[in-house]
Image (cartoon, rainbow, N blue to C red):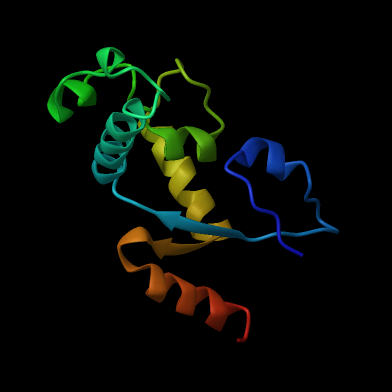
Length: 123
C-alpha cells in the first residue's frame, strides 16, 4: 500500500506498530524551492491565481516576505506549528526522523531517487 500526502501530521495517524510505514522523501534546497515558488506565483498571477500586485517585485524582496514558508520541512518533522520558534533541538529532531524513518531522494536527481526507491523495494 502507498499513502501520498504533504500533510505529515495527518498521515501519521494511519500508522501504528501493527501497520508500519516508511517515508519516501524528496528534498530540495530551501532557497531553490522558494525561488521556484516565486517564479510559479508570478506565472500564475498572469492567469489570475494571485494578482501580481500582491507579489513582491523581486526574488530578494520575496525572500523576506510573508509568502515564504519558513522552515516548512523542519516544522513538519518536528511537529512545530507556524509561528512557533524553531530551535536547534527541533532541527536535530527533524534530522533524526529523516535518519530513522525516511528514504531520502534529492530533487536535483529525481532519476537517482527513483532508482534508490526501486532498490529499497526490491525492484
